[in-house]
Length: 54
Image (cartoon, rainbow, N blue to C red; front, side, top):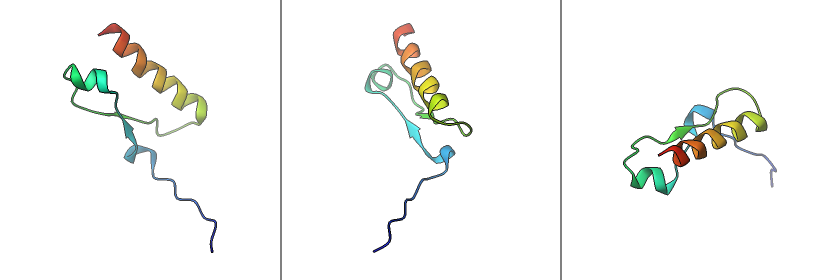
């Protein structure tokens, strides 16, 4: 049995939160195409901040 891992291209991974979608946001947010964990954390925090500003 192979122990391989599949990771999709970043532009194919998107996320959404229930509150913004309930408030009319139509488009899920993409993960950053470049960088690592810190860039993903930064984008998730930006997403959460947009919820607080709504």
